[in-house]
Length: 99
Image 1 (cartoon, rainbow, N blue to C red):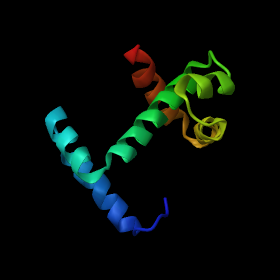
Image 2 (cartoon, rainbow, N blue to C red):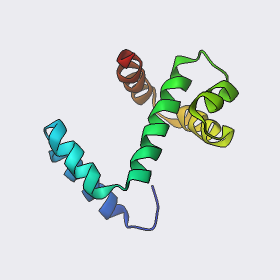
Image 3 (cartoon, rainbow, N blue to C red):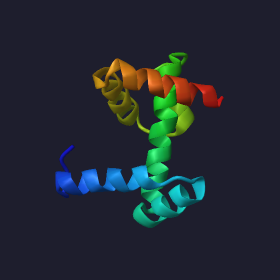
Image 4 (tube, rainbow, N blue to C red):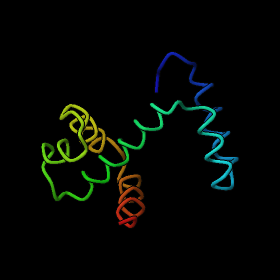
């Protein structure tokens, strides 16, 4: 993943996340590092990935329900096509069990 920061910085962020043990620590950590808008965007991404994994609605239905653009749904769908089977199983197991 390339962005405006260095790859090492991203890996350090992941290592920091891995050190968190409690929900309270996670909430405080992500409140510190992410803006409200970034947290909202991540929440939307989770919601749309969950809907796509359920395979019960069209992309247009998902976009309308989540009040987001079809482009975001399509990006999520395309990303799901590129991940490993193991990650897809993990996401299905955890996201779809939260109903």
